[in-house]
Image 1 (tube, rainbow, N blue to C red):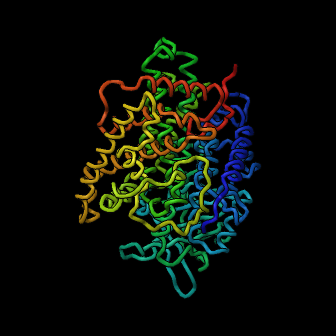
Image 2 (cartoon, one colour):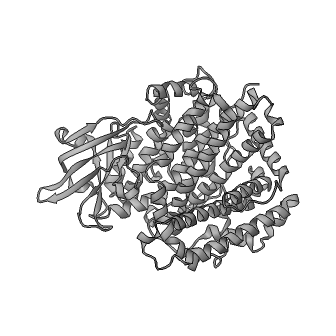
Image 3 (cartoon, rainbow, N blue to C red):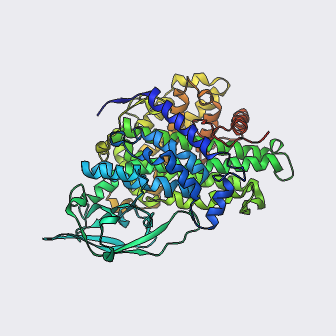
Length: 586
C-alpha cells in the first residue's frame, strides 16, 4: 500500500486530540484535580490505577488510537500513535502501560498476522472498552521474571494449551489474550506458535488466575499470571501459521521496540518539569538556580538528552513507513539506548532535589514515582540482551554494504509533521542492507553545506561532525571484523561495546537530521543550532570523544532559555512543544 497519509488531516487531527486529552486531564499540580499528581500518587499507594482517569480515557475513546482506520479506529501513523500516548505517560506510566500500551503490544500481532475475522473481533473488543494482553515466550524476549512457558499441542480433537506464566500485564482484566506457545520440542525458529484467545470462551475449570506479582515500579499496573490445564483451543485461534510464533514476535518487536520508548520518554518530561519547578521554587544548594552553573548545566543537558531521545524515537517510528527493512535494527537500538539515556537523565535531575527526592507526596512527590517506574517500564517486553542479539549480528552486514556507501535519506525521515506512506505491517520482518540514518551522519561528516547555517557555532559543529565521522570509520572497521563469526561467539564485551557505539551514532545522526530539516513551520527552535551542538557534545562525551573545556557555553544558555520558556507556557519538553495543562500559576 502506498497511499499517503495527508499531513494536514493527520497532523491537525492528532494535534486536536492531544489538546482535548490534555485539557480533560487538567493541571497535574492542582491538588483537587482527580487526574492530577495527588490522585495518581494516592492510587499508586493503593497499587491501583486512578479509576476516574481510567473512566475518562474510556470516555475519550483512547483505545481507538491502537485500532487501524479500516476497522473503525484512528491508528494510521506510527509516530503519531506514540505521540498520542505521551499525555497519559506524563501523568502516570502505570496508566500508560496498563490502559494503553499493554493492549497495543498485544494487538500488533493481530494486525500483523491475524485473519480478517480475528482483526475485526480484536478491534471490536478494544473499541468497546476491553483490553488485550500478550504473553510472550521467554526466549522471544529474554526478560521474564520467572522462566515459565506455555505449550500447545494438536490432536484429532483440536488444540490443547498447557502451562503457566507468572507475569502478564493485564492478564486479570484482559478480554482477549495473545499467547505465544511452544509447539515443537526441537530447537529452531519454527518451535513456537501464537494463538488469540477470548477469555469468555475458555472453559473456566481449565484456566486459573495466578496471584498478582508485586513490583516496586508501576504499582498500579496489574501484573499477574495465568495457568492453563489441558485447555481446549479452537483451531481458528491460531495467529498466522503453525510454527510462525518466533517470526511473528520478531516482526511485532520491530514496531513495539520503537513505539514504547517513544511513549515512555514523556515520563521523563514530568521528572524534568518537577526538578525545574523545585529548583525555581527552592534553589539549589542555597543558591537561585539561575545563578548556579552546575544546576543550569544539568537542566540544559537533561533537556538536550530528551531532544536526542525523541529524535531517535522519531526516526525509528517514521522508518516503519519509509524504510521498513531497516526498522528492526533501529527499533532494537532505540529500545536499547533510550532507557540508558533516560535513566541517566533522571539520576542527574535527582541530585538537584537532594533529600526532597524521597518525598512521596506534595508538589514534588511525583518525581520519586517516575524514578521507580522508569526502570520497569523500560524493561517491558524486550530488554538489553534481546536488543543486542538483534543488532550485533547485523553490524558486519551494514558495515560492508551500507556505511559510507549510501546517499543521505530523504528529509521525510526527520520531519516531524510531514505526511507518510500508509503503514503496512506485512512489510515488517524483512531485514535489508541499508542504513539511512548513518548515511545522514556520513553526509554531514563529508562536509554538508548545512553546517554553514550554524553561524557562530559553525566551527564547533564542524569539529563535532568530523569527530563523529571518524568514529563511524572506526566502527566500520571493527564491525567488519565480526564477519564470519557464529552468533554465539558474538556475545562478548567487545561486541556489546560496538552495539553501544552504533546506537549513539544513530542518535547523533537522528539529531543532525532533525536539525537540518526543521526549517519551516512551528519548529523554529529545532532549526537553530544550539540544541544540536549541546546534544552532540554530550553524545561525544559518552563515546569517550569529549572536547576539551566547554566549547559552546552559549549553546547551553540558549537551550536553558528554551526550557524555561516552555516551562512557563506549558509546552512539552520533547521535539513537538505541544501545549500541556502544566502551566505554573502566575
